Amino acid sequence: MTKGLLAPVRKTITSALCFMVLLQSFSCSSGENKFGFDAVSWKNDLNGCKGTRVQQKAKVEEIRLQLLGLNEREIRKLFGKPDSEELMERSNKVYIYFITPGPKCEQAAQATTKTALTVRMDALGVVREANIFEE
Image (cartoon, rainbow, N blue to C red):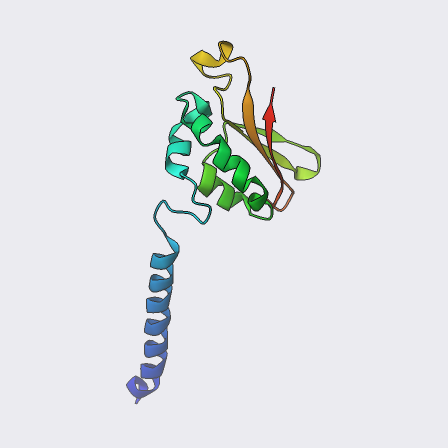
């Protein structure tokens, strides 16, 4: 008699588990992103030392304003771990990604201009500013 009562519950649990597995498999996409940005080569050029980020500068300028409103997890998925990070007041933080060789690169002293992408996030981890600075 108990078997008859548990059958609908098992079926519901099984369906829910199948749905969750299916949802997870579609949410884990390949290296493609909605910006058409080559995230893999960007992430492989830590601190901009290899020079491949310079080639992507135009694309970064193109998508910069589309970054507003994204969350911290999405930024890390797109650009990877920041080269540098600044903690601001009120729990704001700024991620810094060097486009030209950053201070940790051997070529940094030779570079005449220094370029970096900065992404400022509020206390909730939502992007409020994305700028490219040249020094």
